[in-house]
Image 1 (cartoon, one colour):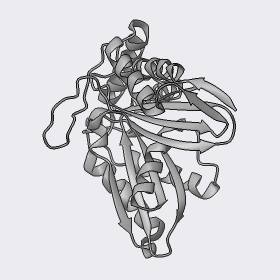
Image 2 (cartoon, one colour):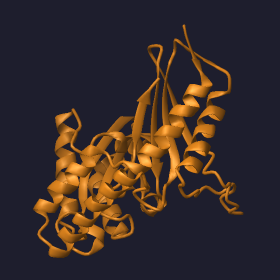
Image 3 (tube, rainbow, N blue to C red):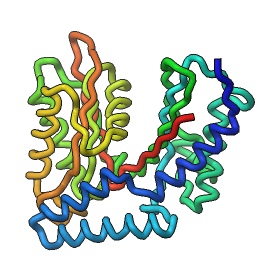
Length: 280
């Protein structure tokens, strides 16, 4: 059994909140550069160049990539041989979010109640998911999610008979309906299977995967590639101003499901699909 001080968790979350909002992931930056080379639209190339320049400024100046610094979504993998000493882990994580957003001069976007809309003032509480895993370590993934893209996400409970064509239709319709709203070029997380909430969860976890890493299952790898091609044929383009590059990647995750169901969730993320990880 290994003991980890809750203060260490707080410090790690604080740091990751700032890093995720300041430093665009290398895989995404490389994908933007490649997209700029392949984009046929002059306006589209200009938009992509601006996004690359924006990421450089944010990194060099330690400033937020986007003014919407997101709701903090945090995935925590806890080794079953870990004992956390001090604060309750949830309190430790939220304290890290509170400190990170204050220290990083980042916009606080969380309201205390979904209908009465009073801002909490410190971007807490975070949305936290836990997995118990083997080992004596804690792995923390911090993935701030802005709502320009989150609002464009969708879930559908398809019939099994809808099959792969139904899944493709659901994804393409979601991107087409979203248009310019999620600040394309987007990254698309797709969750297939499980239950309604499981599909939504794995669609969001899919966004943690590198944009250039395909599903290890050849069937779903081919589906990812097909969907990416179809999305990029929609003509939405960078910033919705037309062009070839509407999406940088499509990441599909699956889970076993009921014989009577085919849940499909589409979690759309903007070009700045922010996430940083650390192991304690």
